[in-house]
Length: 65
Length: 442
Image 1 (cartoon, rainbow over the protein chains, first blue to last red):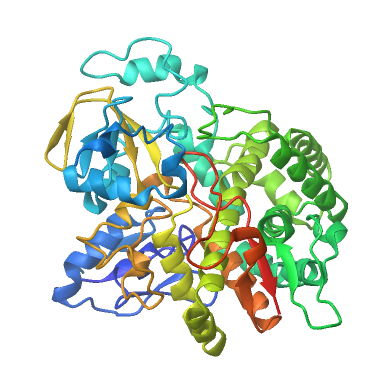
Image 2 (cartoon, each protein chain N blue to C red):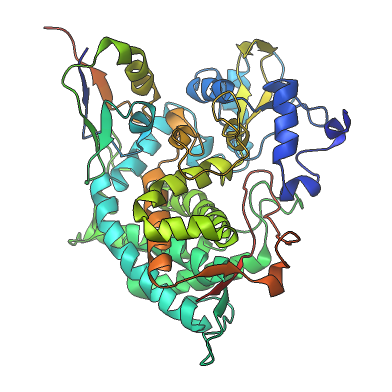
């Protein structure tokens, strides 16, 4: 599983970072940043929760090539 | 013991000082429980609260800040009350405000607001926060009431007595007001007028969720919105390189230019939703710091603890106790069936003390590992747009207060001795926080 955060939509609420700090962190500029290229299986459920909880719908699961 | 159910959460002044035992009793009875006085379904569980917040299709926000209290013009009957909501929406108080909008209108207007408070803009705003905090502290710590816009605080006397001051009106209110004024790019000369208008408003009282039933009071900021509208008009005619021009040129997601009134309403939302709430957050935070010298010392010694401390304050004393939703269709929440047209109050302040999520929830622990899971800012499409702003304001205010003092204590003269303190909390069922906080600062 791979996810991206759309900087044009992200407004730095930090909900994803609270729910899953292993994968998301706020940068100094206040945007959320994805820390892991590949999300390990044990975190899939948590990351999906972060994805649906984003108030700006700024997090996307990348389609598999 | 059932007498807690006799209490009317919305009217009982006793629940203003400490609502938490009542909310815990309600949660224990059932996390989704219909209180008997007004028929409002109180959602006090964490999972249940987030479920409602995430289901904007089922739950309308049309009555989000007033609940059932102004009344609905007609009986809310039927298996799908969506049409009734749309027909009467405009007659409801605060109906044009962002928290009361539903998609698709909400989506567009919120997008407009989110264009104004981007992380980039907030970073610029943060630089002014340090300056604003310092200039207000110059006055607050010296007891210069006129510049702080606050009542007389006594400066530190030559004999080493501490400075004393009322923190809410002497610092928190002008600080949060000026931060938003700066965020909107209001010229310097207007900022002092703003403080004066807010002070006049504080004297007249009122506001949403006012349990003294003076709700829907005249808005003291009205005159400033006219001036703000004039600025937007002006910048649309002649754009400059300033924040106001950015606001004036901001468009809806479809590229259309909003009416000036829409832009003004967004600015008004920032003040109405973002100012008072942050004042309550700052008040709660300073009360905890002043009451707990050990915690204050730990924060002084290790500033990295401040963000966690702020999250724990948001969790334990959520500035917004909760807000309302109206179910459009029959729905089941937490195993409880709710018919269409049910008034639901989602209690962030109760969800944040749900023992199923937060261990020993009534204990304040600034190192609580999952404190940030609180829903003080709500969840879903109505998540507080100003959360990053509020966090930055709290962090900067606390940093500078700690930098510029060696000890912050509760004024015993005003609040009584430890163990027998007297505090007064704002009398509303929506907001949680102190009306006054008298401090002694060294």
